[in-house]
Image 1 (cartoon, rainbow, N blue to C red):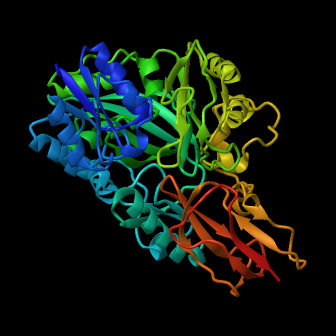
Image 2 (image 1 turned 60 degrees about the vertical axis):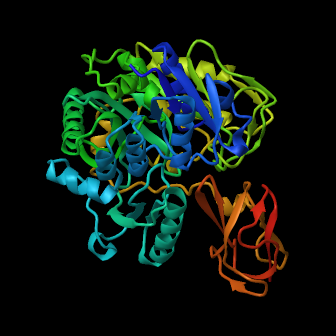
Image 3 (image 1 turned 90 degrees about the vertical axis):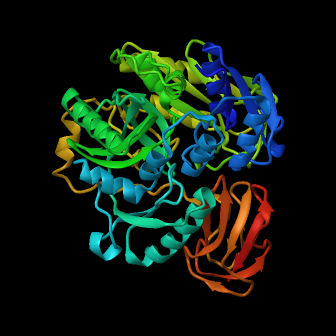
Length: 537
């Protein structure tokens, strides 16, 4: 077994890996960037080494050599799926706790992954040129994940801007601006299969997680098992995931993601790392996935999978606005997290939430013998939770977990469009396995508009001659300034593009107007509420 482990990451995932390592009596090493010295993970390991950046692979290797660590666990995000980092770790004669570099390359490139999946008999969503696949379509980053570099395009007029924005966002997030177009499936479920594979040729499916509730293409609530999957479909999904993993020579923990519509499903991508939502699988299987990663990296074979037990559900508590989902900053003056359920936290009371890193505060995960019991436990835990000093999505999570459509298990990826955050809930919805198939014979529902970024970003009183001010709805960086003083602009025309957490937010004009003043320049950092552009007649 490994004796000393460096975690090339920060926050909640670093703390999670530290816990697993300690249970195996493995010493731990934390790394910390100069702007992150006050973080909880930096004061929680056996040793801590300062590095220049979490994105510099040579810094992690230097820290491992300096402390005598034998192995590196990359967590998720940052360099976790970077095959060059995996190769560098191996070349330094350290143990890489993750998939082989070749498997990361094959699974990490979405286009190559789709080609391999198709060759392995796994259904995939058609890709191609826009004129070939038609609209609506989705632009995706070839090297991407987590919703970054992803844009839904409903007609040709939106395509050029979507391609440009996707390339720019993909370059910032992954260092690779390649994008591709894929047919857009309107109202699927998002279901993923947890995989474990050892170096002896054993590949296991540990069942599915339903991650259909999403904002900005990022997951909000995850549960296992999925309320929409029966045993036959579960076996088909598991077999498809194992077939793909086998085809690329996968090793360690990984997740195959699928879109599901009725009994049809399509492979989306393979995440070659531990997932944020892995605790729900751990609670229903009794398998510690991080410990399994460490044992696999040490050369051990896999144990027999015991099968699912009960139901688990997870939500992510973020420092973000409950309606817009824009990240928030501030110092946590009071933090009361619930007891009686699993809580994987990344911060403590007194810690600062900044803009440089993911604003997740904690994951709350409940487990019960039934789905209703798990959701009831989670609802009670959210009512017990208290945070003062920073705006969080706690009101949204309380609304979400009690929502009748969620409780009925009838959610799709369109849920937050059809039911805007904190909107009045409909009456009780009966859960029935016949609900989804009948929808196949109906026209697509008329979707409510998502939260209006522009209405929340300024003082917009109409076009009667009064002046409007477009304000920053969140702290961020101005990465594009698209207008100058004196320009005439149309309603919904983009004016400024803000970036926060490597996600772009375009701010548009609320009506036909003239730009009276511009208060920022490209590259400027702005606070929430800062005036950006003034409009008038």
